[in-house]
Image (cartoon, rainbow, N blue to C red; front, side):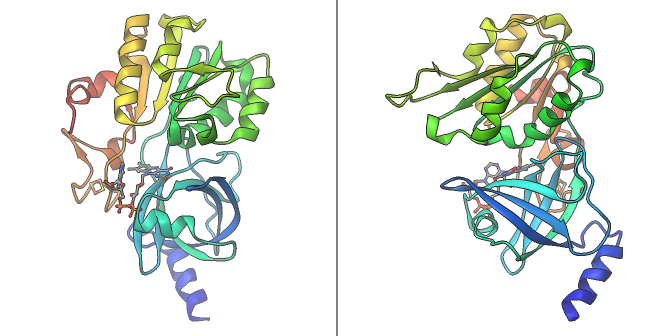
Length: 286
Ligand SMILES: Cc1cc2nc3c(=O)[nH]c(=O)nc-3n(C[C@H](O)[C@H](O)[C@H](O)COP(=O)(O)OP(=O)(O)OC[C@H]3O[C@@H](n4cnc5c(N)ncnc54)[C@H](O)[C@@H]3O)c2cc1C
Ligand code: FES
């Protein structure tokens, strides 16, 4: 009863620091250290978000971390998040079982410009877990496939066993209107696909670099090499979008934890256009 009252109060609150209560629904183990959770609100409002945005997920008594949406924006009954256990909070989220309660603040941040990309070729470049924040954009684009030119999805991962969302990758690969390429750093004996880093796939792509929009997410070093390969291929820097990560606290531009040059990644990002950040993006360790 007390928890229900707190949940109702939180649901009505517009205070961005107050988490709303969500119930964990289906939990899918993607990889030994990575799970995808479906979270439904205990009380209204129903969740809505744009592809590329993130929530702050709060495990009571443990802490709060930024996690991107990985589900379809068309489904406003739940948030879907894919979480890799790397520390205390992400480990606690990954250990949650169906029926557990979790706190959610959000959604926060900028989004992939899926509407602005209509009429253009779209190239999506993911490294490892970077496919999670890109998946909502892929859902939107495939749902409106006829509004875009050529679509390429390039995915790099350490080994074939580290591939996320295998069942969906197979479905995307079967489509004749999407070019899906996967490359691995280290191949297993039964791997017959590409071996090497994901930027190496870019020169082989069939696309119009001057009329393409690129979305990329992954480790920063991977995005740096990807951006260089795209620029060399002739893609203008104002058509390349990256999703940046920094430790977050407030998520609303107040605390300064996520500062990146003159920008705050929680409100000016996480999705940022390369030409706006190119000077600072070229500097490592910022
Ligand atoms: C906008 C945004 C979106 C994110 N989306 C996802 C997502 O969809 N799925 C997911 O699993 N994770 C995501 N992360 C990363 C996630 O927030 C961190 O893994 C989490 O904060 C780690 O907290 P922890 O307490 O579990 O581990 P900690 O004990 O805080 O850290 C464990 C290790 O992870 C490193 N680390 C902590 N935070 C980050 C970070 N932000 N980036 C890189 N390394 C970090 C630490 O340096 C340390 O080595 C996102 C981060 C941001 C900023
Ligand atoms: S997390 Fe506080 S300013 Fe971005």
